[in-house]
Length: 361
Image 1 (cartoon, helix red, strand yellow):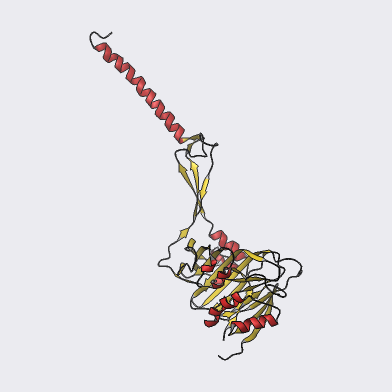
Image 2 (image 1 turned 180 degrees about the vertical axis):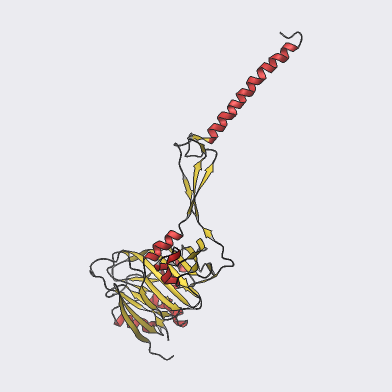
């Protein structure tokens, strides 16, 4: 039997005028005559070899007062509100190191070619009933309904009976998860003022499910109409890496290092709540998907060959100076002075030689 984890951000959904807007680890579905887009998606993934947790925070924009987000997971999941502090903590831990690099000869923006100087920086998701409601709870602004289904068409019928409607393309995209007997849950947002559009940063949600592999669902993102950007903080026993690009550019590690999440050792309650406290390896991964339609699977992350630490360095290039004077100017002045001195030393010597030669005036 397939359990379904859906996040439905709305009071009801009518007919759709466009395919679902997909984001990194799910699909965003607007209501009739409206649009909604995920401007930023940040996820924290924690895995201890048996249990996986995903804390996701979405920043949305558009004019839709209602929308639905659909998220698949490999097994039936529990859902609770996430602690937003975990994002600021991990952002601080992975801040790039700033490094100043000096260059000798002036560049186009330096005197005498340009202004007085400047910097340039280089930076570095048989037999049971077709659909079954298995639980429902209220989490802050979210109304969570967890479903089980073994047929994508049955899921679509259930959603339609309850005021929701999914596009055919999304139904087709869900079929591989049905075939693999993946799970989903339904979460419904009940905004205080339904007239206001969904806009800004939504409260993070924390999903927890059993998994013997570290999986980040991405397959639904192929429905996206715009290029996608994925950012992951991965907390595990070792440095982790995706098995492949799954249709995007090569994933890039922006941070890798072991951290201690115990509050007494500098960690926070938010991090300790995800890891259980203690040392853990943190890997920050970024990836771009210029053509989302090429996405051909979900990310499976594995341990890297070695726990090699890494930290992104942001370089600031500065003209080498001595005090306030460019070093190249001082070098040219010194060379000129040396040349003048050499000439001054040669003139007397030449005169002495001339005087020593008989018949020289």
